[in-house]
Image (cartoon, rainbow, N blue to C red; front, side, top):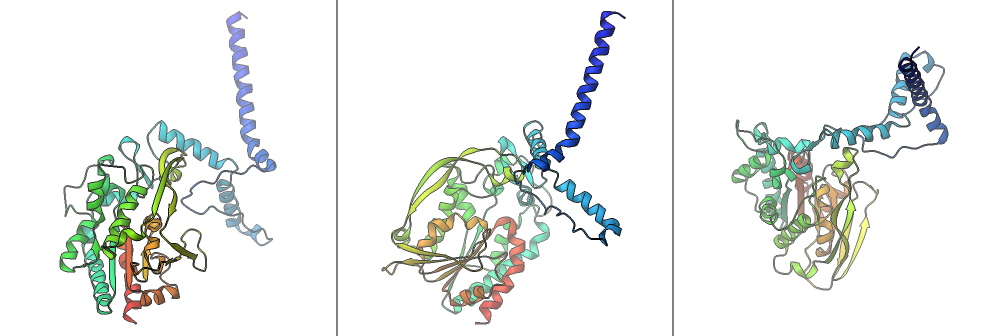
Length: 386
């Protein structure tokens, strides 16, 4: 046997042993991970993971019991999240794709929520009647409130793709009505006028040349965008003295990641501006209303001012886009109660606060206009019952 042949046999035998060792390690690593108490870092999951099925003698005779155990181990595999994160990093950095269908990767690494892309592509034709109904409901609400000496303010927080379409990288529609749902809503307001409607998209489009208004890796506006929205709200409700109650805001920069990168299981820290601290002209009592909701809290703010410059008691029905503006505006009201219109309208207190307030603010992000239409009858019913 010559030297080359012996070297080949040695190399083959060595590779076979290495392959066998890797296979054994992969086979026993989940067992070792469970024994060691290893815990995965939590990821943003699109669904609830399967729990271990309850053991019983009857279950042993049920074929579905064993399928559920298999599903449990697939979901709770000890290194599952690490493997998902590894795949996410490869997809993102190597192939420029997203592990989740909910996130779209645009130009220059800008990320968008995929559910807002139909609005960007002007594919709202089928929602024309829904937008007419939404405009009719809002107009009706304003009419009812005005008759009672009250005021309505309705605002739409624009999708990120509405303010930053240049980074999407998709062609817009050239067929059908060539309008988004928001475009159709604006048309419907010609038929059902709403005096208390403030357009934020125009203001944000004008301001974006001076500073960035939305996070590149999140769905929401940043501190700059939120401040513009806050000032527009206060100027409408208190045009002369709104600045008297506006806080002094100190900002700073910090390395943070975004909602969309979290959804992609890609931790990517970039420098972002955030609110370091605020100083209000007077004391504000702040309460989280019961029952507490850590994810979607209900707040009650009461400003302790001796002046008469505060906005009368107000209710805000909102979504997550109001998280930042609340920091700027919460000291401008005699009393401000905030609720999430998607989740809290069944609370008895909401109806009572709506009837007791002098001002009602409804804020809705552009992509949720259709769901809002289904919720407004609850608000209308509460106002009409008074």
